[in-house]
Amino acid sequence: MSIAIRKPAPRRARRTPSRWLQPAAAILVAVLLLGIPFWLVIVTASKDQAEALNPNLSLPSTWRLFENFATVFVDGRMWPAFLGSLLVMVPAVLGVLILGSMAAWILGRRSSRLLAVLYALAISGIVLPPAVVTIVLLLRQLGLAGTPVGMVGVYMGMYLATVIFFVTGFVRTIPPELEEAARVDGAGPVRVFITIILPLLMPVLATATILICLYIWNDVFYALFVIGGRLDTLPLNLYQVASSGLYLQNWHLIFAYIILMSLPLLITFIVAQRKIISGITSGAVK
Figure 1 (cartoon, rainbow, N blue to C red):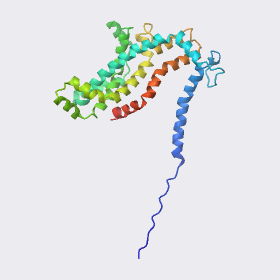
Figure 2 (figure 1 turned 90 degrees about the vertical axis):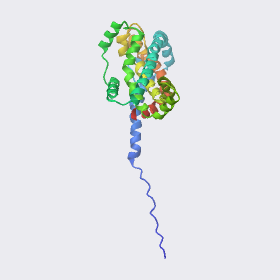
Figure 3 (figure 1 turned 45 degrees about the vertical axis):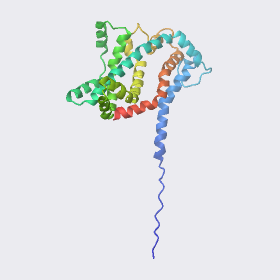
Figure 4 (figure 1 turned 180 degrees about the vertical axis):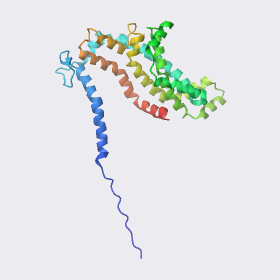
């Protein structure tokens, strides 16, 4: 005679308050830190001069956002400043990506004490701030002060370390057998890099591109010392017109300018956010 033994029913997991309190708190903090400043910018840019004299979170009596956009674009000389930003940013980003990815390929594939020291020196630029006075004096000696070429060189020197840091970790995850198979077929180093390595680096290069574009697009400090008064970029132009009579106390125009200046990178970031996250996790973490 057998006695059937009933198994105790599995206990249901109790929903503790911490399971929903933590996500709710995180969302609340994000709304407070990001939502409130964003709302302040939008409503202030939509007001007239009298209402925007003291920026606050109240709604405008009449929405004038697009009218302020038109005023800023015409009177604020945004189009020449936009072209100036592209003139500096595009060659700087391309140069940093090409040189940084090639250097990272060598540093990630070969191991020696000398290369380890070179790698440490290469990525030290992430934490060591550049000396502005020395940069300006050196550019004057080279005849590049106040020129787009000099500004491109400054940005390349500043952000080359960022590309090397991201790409070196990613290169070490690529199987060396792919390169060996290409060399057996008669491919040289340049062909191996262009046909094998470079296509595999696209996720991490997309991450580095967005980050460096963000840094350069919003930079006003180094641009002021290197090309200030000779070439306008968007942040430098905003600094100049905000301190002049045109935008003095005109907070509605200043915030409208900030929105227009941020739109290109904001749209790019929204479109490429998955590639940015995948590049960070696959490159820097590994």
